[in-house]
Length: 117
Image 1 (cartoon, rainbow, N blue to C red):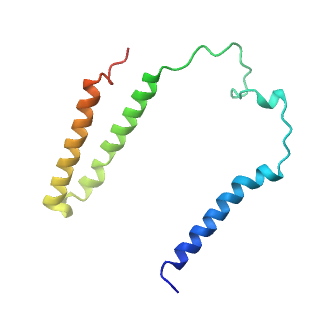
Image 2: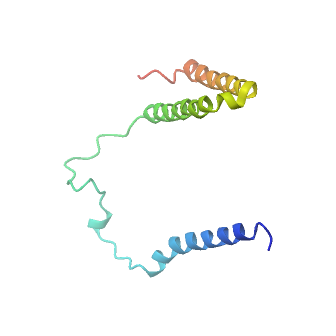
Image 3: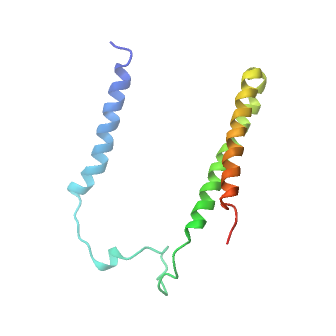
């Protein structure tokens, strides 16, 4: 048997299961919409007023920047653990990584992405 045979079988089974779990409930389930089911779920509490407004886009931009820089900072730990084994190549790779990170940080800073207005 081809060495990629089990992988192909696994992918076919995974795709079939995903398609089955996606489309089977829609085909077999009973659709009985009513106004109560269409209401927004607010953790069991009845909404007392209309939505006060939308979050500004800046909120989401700052959240995404935090996640990006946090994930990049978390990549320093595995590098520090393997630093002795990586030697000079690992050091040069991390220097390039930090330079790219600094360029991104400077770009966001110049565009005013870190200022909360």
